[in-house]
Image (tube, rainbow, N blue to C red; front, side, top):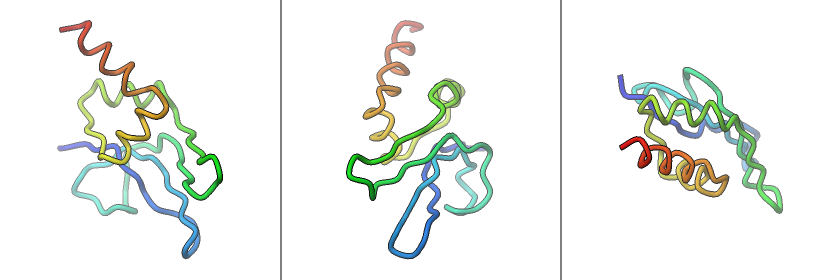
Amino acid sequence: MAVKIRLARGGQKKKPVYRIVVADERFPRDGRFIEALGQYNPRQDEFLLDFKEDRALEWLNKGAQPTDTVRRLLRHAGVWTKFKTKATAEA
């Protein structure tokens, strides 16, 4: 089972709000997911990015692959660098 960290769309028409979720890649974008990690709202002046950092690191360590957009958001929050420095320290 390939696990992805990706965005699931919510909100109204033309007003998207996204949830950051951990899901099996075989499930649809807005379908079933394993765990919700947080939310992302790109429509605010300073976009809202709120998620569980410790749970995201745990899923990354388990082998979950983030999508390109989620990887960019993780870099913006500083989680991706924590993951990479921990991975290189263990190797």
